[in-house]
Image (cartoon, rainbow, N blue to C red; front, side):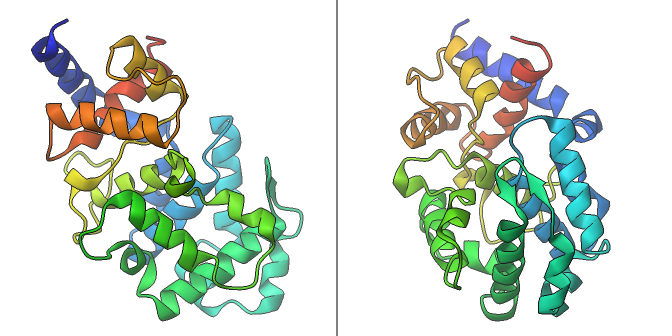
Length: 252
């Protein structure tokens, strides 16, 4: 395929996969259970944080977190007492355990009480998304915490593609016109977003010659972002649906 044919192909696949069908097979279904902005944000952030590994397991663990917070994550984050965090005892999703989720709740409480919530932390002027993620991590870990918990928030400045945070940002920022993403955050332009680079998107991008680098790291993300922005500078991350769908559902 030449560049125009490839763009047409990816546009078609993006439109095909950005649909209710996608929600039924994706962790984004967890925040879709809520209607309140802050509930969607917190449910989305916590779900994205554990979004690696088997999808059935991801959904099961995310549902458990929502159940422990009695289906009201924002209220739980704001008003929980120290003893309420004991409800997470025994929680584990792969390497994310009860101590990690307990810290995440405490830190989210601090962010919503003192930093304008998750949207406020990420809506920092005109700096690039990857720097915003880096600054978010600095704020997120201002409270006393176990060093091990830091590994659950990626940092692009340390070479990470930060797949899960970029996915969360896609959920919050991109238009809800198709009913998949939420379009809740208006201070960040979709043009600034980076693709959630994972095994599926990386492998398909390489097969389509959109990406040469073998590792799925920050440099690969930068390269893929540049390729996709040539196809649609206003909404480059829509191609996440195409690349992921081709890899996960079509075994491209």
